[in-house]
Amino acid sequence: MGEGSDDEGTPRVGTHLASMMTMSEVGIDFERANAARIYDYFLGGAHNFASDRAQAATIVAANPDMPRVCRLNRDFLGRVVRWCLAAGVDQFLDLGSGVPTVGNVHEIALAARPDARVAYVDFEPVAVHHARDLTAGLDGVRVVQGDLRQPEAVLRDPGVAGLLDFDRPVAILAIAVLHFIDDDLPSIFGRYRAALAPGSVLALNHGSADQDDPVLAEAVRDIQRGYRGAATPVVLRDRAEIRELLDGFELVVPGLVDPVDWPVEQPGVEPIGAYAAVGRAPAAR
Image (cartoon, rainbow, N blue to C red; front, side, top):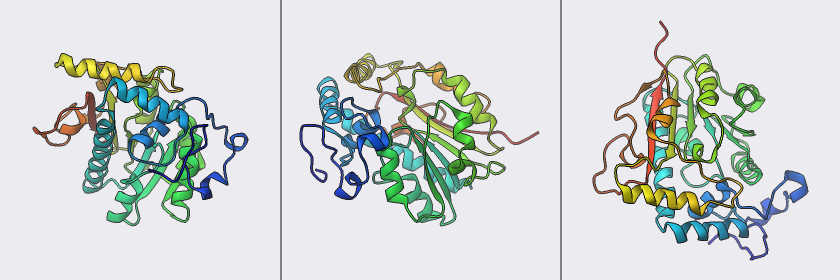
């Protein structure tokens, strides 16, 4: 799987990407696993290092269901993007977008709306460099290296401010990333929400051990334990804390649910132990 690797930390990346990146150029830490690259590995991608694969093995040892969790998170992202397009929202700000793989936001959006606009934001150098390589030449797509914990810097970056029109509805996506942020998320997302026009969307999902099923709750804690030692450990929040991130926005039916059950319940699919929701900015009064 992938385009070649070794066990001494060499990137599992194509030679075209490897040749343009050195540790000194982009500040890559080959020694510490990173959530974006671990996620890429679980999705079958080639843009990860030996440290990421070792951490992935630790995670799977704790919870063998983790690759399925990642795939279902990705499926949720696709459903959200399609829902936004059907609702007339064709601008996307993808926070913590990770390493691009099949089912990217821009692939889905541009297939339905060639004039759609997508700004990707990620802190991880491999994710950013590969995303730029993948989207080169696409007028409606920009890739920004930035930290979602700094909303003002993200929103004023030319790759975001020069592409997205915040006088019109924008969909902010924060999918499978917030449980890697150990900061004051209500304050952070309050600033993002304040920048959005009426009709805009905030879509998120977040791992949580606040589950009615104790077996599922323990499986989530197993995942958290598996990330110990990574550069991006997991921080779990309860239902109320996750709901607070959408304060003032109108929750789209069915509200706050496991990602597999948004927007409709899937009785035959086991939940992944997270909460997902889509909120919409109310019309101006």
